[in-house]
Image (cartoon, rainbow, N blue to C red; front, side):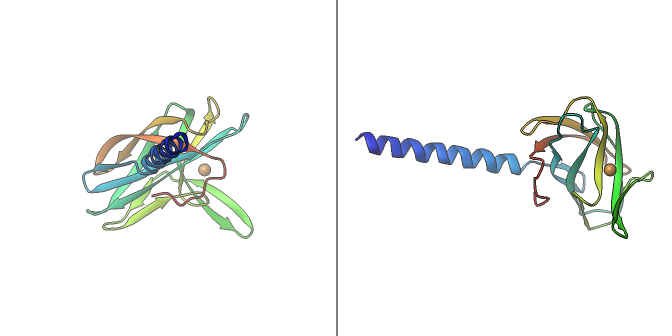
Length: 158
Ligand SMILES: [Cu+2]
């Protein structure tokens, strides 16, 4: 009797946990013809001056552009690209924002396009969330929630 009870409890806990983690991975937003998938940021360590934010945008409509991002976690928020220059990774501020071609998917991910949180007011803690305001040229504006994930989190979220 005792072992049946504990097994049932264990299964219930497992089910709850897997639902919770599935749920945590699956957040997404719709703004007109844009679908914004899983905004997340990498956790940072104490003293780290800046952090990166990532998300995926599916654009099923006409060409649009992500103009800017705003958040309270840092003094400034910029849109950046990253590319290899020989053996050196270089980041560049995108003054014209990030292009979202008609009918295409654009993914912001580590080592590539990203949102840069510059001069963090406090470290980004794994498991926490913070609001991010996104402005698009045509689709308008939206508030999304950014999930902070482990420093070594893989760029394979959807
Ligand atoms: Cu950057």
